[in-house]
Image: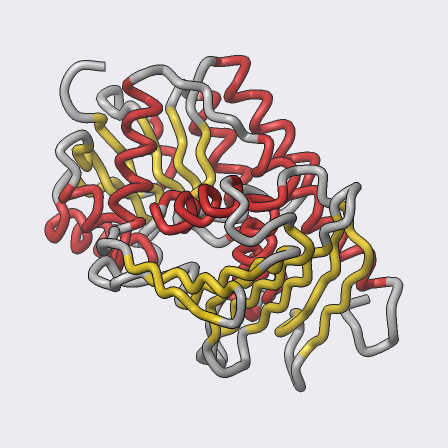
Length: 328
């Protein structure tokens, strides 16, 4: 690849306009080539704001010869269709999480990208924040002794009634929208060999999707992982790692602003050490990682993406075997 990566945007979702398109504009290795929407006026409005030409329709965007990669911020239920279409058209893809709503489709798309030598990246941004790599380093160096347990939570306040995340036909629900964060964090720190022990999903009054839930997982050894998530709650975004000799706590873990000063709490021997790091823009880091993967023709390690999809499916199936007011 010579020059900036020319990206086409399929859809004008809120996360695209608020976070990703500004990051694309700020990245010297990316150029927005086109913005597609089923609403022609919306495509024109977004393209005027961020650059690129407006395109009416998603399929029309994939016919543009100068587009090298595609960003897919559509509702979750549409990810598989348009990710597959983009890969089949020979485009690299950055797709919002979850990559698909079905474990088998996720595996198929990862295989398709691998076979065609294309980069397929799920847009889980927090894993690109340097704070979590520092946590990994501390654990690897024995700062808390042998890991024993992991707890993580991500909950957000109620959404407007018409929000697509309340629509089951569009892939809505708390598990896919917010549960993926603590689940991915468990995989990030404990590895891909996590197995599901049990799960619970609950629908709020009048809702057609689950609005909260929890799951218990375990490694083959002695480490348990408990995750909690919901989208009709007080805000919380945190995780904690317990070890045989201490613990590590992280707050504002999953969606910190770019100017946020990240802090790691290291608890040992009755004392607490606050390790402060420089602010880090995880959106910019994610965009740069995608551009670098395409530039260097690096086929990403997608094991976490696949295992995450498998566990999301297992959590749904486990919860459906639970009490009547679950998600069955």
